[in-house]
Length: 283
Image (cartoon, rainbow, N blue to C red; front, side, top):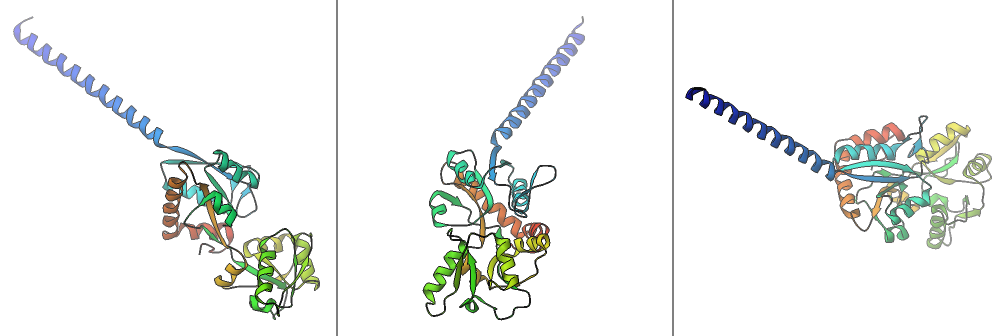
């Protein structure tokens, strides 16, 4: 091999080695980047009871669906650091699951109560405003606000529900104009039938839920729309996702708050509300 050929061979070999090193280095860098990316994605398990519809339900393919689930899936798209998964459980087990660390999120049209706020972290942003309405007999016109409920009869389950708490507080504030509670263990359908038959004057209902009940049972009723300030006197109308107060709970909550603000600002939350609930119940 002459001198020129030896030099050419040496240069070719050196270049080949350099390319191999670069390629290997790039491959390792890509693998490391991929590995780092995978390590940063944290799986979040959401506990939900799978009901009631239209907030949460199981579709014909046995998949969870509903407004709450759809909102969470949109949040998942906005937060690449998390992979949101769902698990159906009993309603009380949502809270027990957060206690044990099994669930990082609870989602089931959950409203604030003092005992819940003591143990769990609520989002700063709510994703649903419950339009509570007064339900009356078709054609009735003498009830236009909560002040017109004085002297009227409402069937109430004595289990400490929002109806009972509101009536007790109302009567305490209006001792000369009390609402008449009729304590009963009957279901809500029987209460609606009593209103139709004149055995009771009114009850409260979530406007979203009443729509489906009227369709399913063929019960014709009228509703009295209330301003937000009156709704808030009857019950807490805002629904939140809940998180653990410990560990990553605060950081996850903050990320969810940011995502919900984005969905509110870009109109997606309103779009989902109309799709699943029939109207804009976001604010």
